[in-house]
Amino acid sequence: MPAIRQAFAAVFFSLLISGTLQAAPIDPPTVALSRGTVAIVVADYRGNPGGNRILFDNVTRLQGFGEVPDLVELVAPDRADRLEVGSRYVVAYSQYKSSKTKQIIGDPAGAHALMSPGMEPAIWKADPQIESLALWRPDLDPAGIEAALPRLLAMLASSDLDMQRFAAAEIRFRPVLIAKLDAAAQRELATFAGREKFTAASARAAILAVAHDMQPIARLQQQWDSVALRILRGGPLDTMAHERYAELVMTAFERVERRGVKVNQSSLQRWLRSDDNALNEQALLALRRQSPEAERAALDKALRRSDLPADTRLFLEGHHQRLTHTTRPGRQ
Image (cartoon, rainbow, N blue to C red; front, side):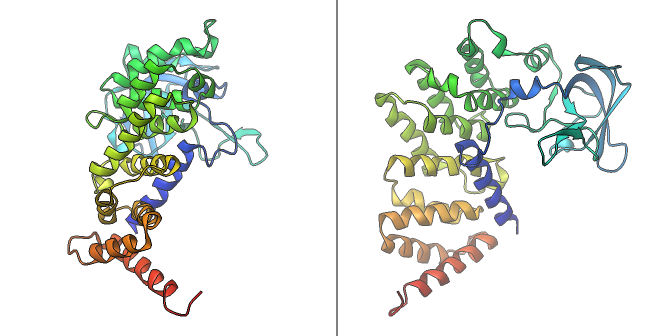
């Protein structure tokens, strides 16, 4: 069922960016790109040569070793259908993967575009700014990683969604940088997280998650809370039509729960009409924390609607049955 699959994805990515699933530190994009097993090229996209593959030619290498290949053939990543035949791209890819024993081995599936937070996949329309970004190594700056912050904030302020995703992940997965964010930087980040227009939802989610980890300045706590409340109050319910918006809403739910911020019941009730079951569940849990009666009343009201997505209705009916079963007189 699409809603259940999307619900799983929303939970997974939300847990990932919030740190819950981090068994090991996640590399920020610039570190992932700097690995010795990663090649970076500029090449023309030639389409699908057959099977689950994409092909590039007219290759210029920016990073790598050995002879420059005439062709680069990769396992087709998600979003490959967005690539334009004949256009030139910056591509970061690898022929290797990590084994179960953490050894680097050749990938039997073939070379693949780098997939890492902020680069999903690492294929961008070529221009000098992108080429510079692909080779940027802020860890080598004698001034320290905090010297990278102005460039990252400028990337977030741009209207380029790929730049936003890259910068957000770079900040999200650099604890040392997060620890050094001053009031001005925190204010800029909160403003970005609250921006609806011309922004990537996954980048906003990553930045909203940063507020979980930093030492927030007291007078800015309310600004971060307001960002989460606005998302819950007005975000689109048809999350499948808005790439990774469910991830942003899930992060907003996490923010208000951690902070103990009371959410207006009308904001919670609207998420019972969402096409994402994980968000349906988060709304029900938040209503239950306010009162079991509020949860049941909102659930009954939602089920009386005629415009619920089919998967949402199925989920809510199942929840209603479980709720009725567990609250039946005589049950413990």
